[in-house]
Image (tube, helix red, strand yellow):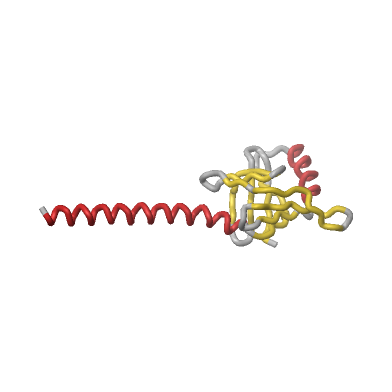
Length: 139
């Protein structure tokens, strides 16, 4: 009888350890995306899907020229700023709190949102279906 109680305690401890480990792992994954986002990202270019028409590429090229000089700044407290060059001065054009989807694959800020296609130490790539991929480079 005493031995069964001991095994039961061991099983409960192992289950608790497993759940704590699982929760820490999931939490670390979520903060990993946030940590990678923190910093400033300069608009770099657009990557076009192969099936885009010439007309769509031309319209996107106009948008790309408007994005030139755009800088996204993410802070570790979940805030962001978007700055742009206006009259040769950097001006804040949007700010607020950024949102990540539950699985950290979708980023949303005021005026810009998309699925995260790639996020590493150098590049942040955002896309929406049937749209070019917006590429930002770590500044």
